[in-house]
Image 1 (cartoon, helix red, strand yellow):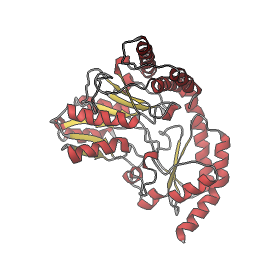
Image 2 (cartoon, rainbow, N blue to C red; image 1 turned 90 degrees about the horizontal axis):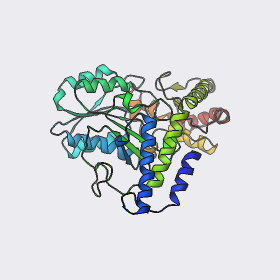
Image 3 (spheres, rainbow, N blue to C red; image 1 turned 120 degrees about the vertical axis):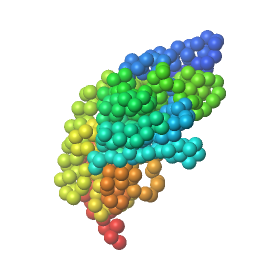
Image 4 (tube, rainbow, N blue to C red; image 1 turned 180 degrees about the horizontal axis):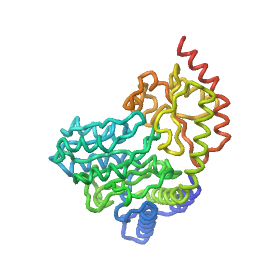
Length: 372
């Protein structure tokens, strides 16, 4: 966590009070919550009234997708890209299974990008039947950045609400809610040095999704529940710091990422870089290692102190090829033999040196294990 987030949370943890209470302690907590709301809004080009606090990105995605679908019935079509995070895919599929939704996963190209013409063609098959559209800002596995501004404009040309999951983008790319054209935007704390279990859905005032959970009517009666003031304070501090430092961090991570890619290619000549080689997240490098099982290679690297991933942490332990790589046209074997290396604000060249030191032997051992 960022020191600023820890400091903000620690200060709030020393206080008592419920932000919904009218007594002095409650009013003090409410002041912290509303100041945090203003901080996030200022940092992200939103109005304070557009910030709806949640427990993280998954809840925000569920609220956007389910809530907007219910609010716009009898329209039944829900459009997503085929490379969305499961926090978006799974609620959409649940709507299809239990709520009569018609979910359409739109094809991406070999770099993982959704072309605006693909979205436009899907809409125009029957514009009046589309309830909502959800396209992530940047892919959590391969790092490809989507043309969100253009995609949102296509949606608005047809009067359709557009949601984007910006969990991966925030802190690494410039993110402005107003300039994006999105009607709803998901963010979470732990990706930017804030606390786990904190997040928000930025939601334009003219849009009112049906609530997923009911209770005290907090957060515009869109998301009921007692507000976690320490987590909210930590989230606000992390958002503010991440946005202020984004440009400098982006430059540093881009340089470090490019060095990592170059050195991995030199160390393992037949490795394949996945995703857009240019239009990708500064801190993302995603490779397929021919002849390797990703899980085996991950554990070999982990034993040497290098922590990486075969995909989304939310899907860890699920032995199946990445749906993202399959959607991009990869063969199942290549999809199973892939790893994601993620750089963040604590990453240094020493980390890259350590990876290159241990990677060739780990790849060789993983390949031998695959042949046995």
